Image (cartoon, rainbow, N blue to C red; front, side, top):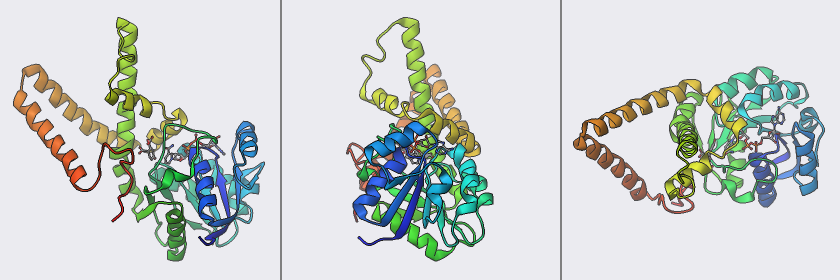
Length: 305
Ligand SMILES: NC(=O)c1ccc[n+]([C@@H]2O[C@H](COP(=O)([O-])OP(=O)(O)OC[C@H]3O[C@@H](n4cnc5c(N)ncnc54)[C@H](O)[C@@H]3O)[C@@H](O)[C@H]2O)c1
Ligand SMILES: O=C(O)C(=O)C[C@]1(C(=O)O)C=C[C@@H](O)C=C1
């Protein structure tokens, strides 16, 4: 693979940045990767495990002379980081991010970027419940989608170069506008996470109240909820605070449907329950027929044509 960006700077050395580092090395698409994390402990770990060619003492130092800067911090910290680096960015450089929310990140970052710098937000749809510099691995992005969110007037060459970069890291790329992205992700990722957090909280309360063995005998479905509910608290606090509108819209619909099912159970309306479950079963079967086996460990990865 040939070099796509001479110098890449990764700001925030957690799961996503450390996975990017491993995937960049595997693909050989950068000559030098610099890194910065706010906490001295994270920087020390990064140096100890050889994450990045050079770990810097400030975000500005890491970004000086970089051709691609990727903001890999929690969504609520993106604006502050952009303010720290704005003055040192070289003309022609591309600034991107990996935030799980797009509209709020764009509003927070764009005002700090100087003229002549390309801003191309992105979101790799890949992750785990783990966080921190030790949690990354090169395969994280393999056959996953990475959504690219070009801005009005974005330079096409800069957008296509970033797409080529993510493809080299193993992803398939697609373009989407920020508002649509935030609504889609509220359905497929943000609301499900909130529901998992709630379900695990409820089970834990119940355990305390009844001293029953809810957790000990939890079935596979519930265990999947506990995996999701173990995700990083800072990251998810920021996701909900920054994708309020779309998440509340989806949760409103979810609550309405839940109330309708609750009522059907109370009134013994079996027809309603049966019709509802028939519809959801057809949705899952549709997913499988479309080539996505939801039992497979790689569910969610893009199938080869
Ligand atoms: N974890 C996932 O599943 C996933 C998937 C796709 C996208 N994302 C997005 O990627 C971003 C990073 O997530 P992650 O899972 O790698 O998180 P993480 O917690 O593993 O890493 C975040 C890193 O950012 C550092 N940091 C926090 N504030 C900072 C600041 N102001 N300046 C410099 N460094 C700072 C932290 O010390 C930490 O090292 C988030 O915006 C998240 O929404 C996460
Ligand atoms: O697999 C997981 O653990 C994830 O939650 C990953 C997941 C998702 O919801 O699919 C989480 C947040 C992201 O922004 C993208 C991916």
